[in-house]
Length: 220
Image 1 (cartoon, rainbow, N blue to C red):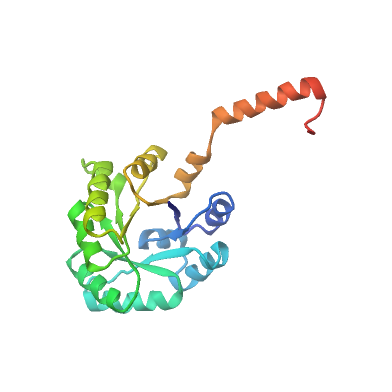
Image 2: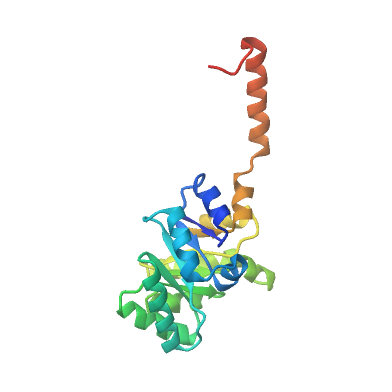
């Protein structure tokens, strides 16, 4: 299993990477714009925080295959462990095929259907990113789509992994992992919700209270 942080918030990355065994950080143009650092500035800052072994994802803005390829090569030069996110559209499939031939790792992003994800995988993407909550918000079933996509990949493209994205609740993350997704990318607010444990806090406080009654201090 791989857990990624879906953010360009450097403080959040530093905070959560000390708590969670993250595999890396994912970004998209909207996230990068929120952070107000261009990628040539942002990516080195993220790399310094997460270290050399983790993976960073960054997305192209171009729409035409040739421009996507050029932008992907530029991004790949910015970081040696970068995976380039390519929208899973017709021009994106062409770009993924060309980049795969050059050994540039890619992720097919903005997946809203199982076949769309399968096409991206068949074109050579290492990862595909179904948008769980966004599909739910448009009346679809994000978890069911992840289940179907995982089955297709197991049958036809086992070298490609789902990196499930677009979460609003911890239960969506859990359901994706139970559906077979091997990787998830989680925004900081959802990660913090997953780490919060009021019932555990109550139990720990009770343990401390009972100990103090007998021993007077918290030293073992």
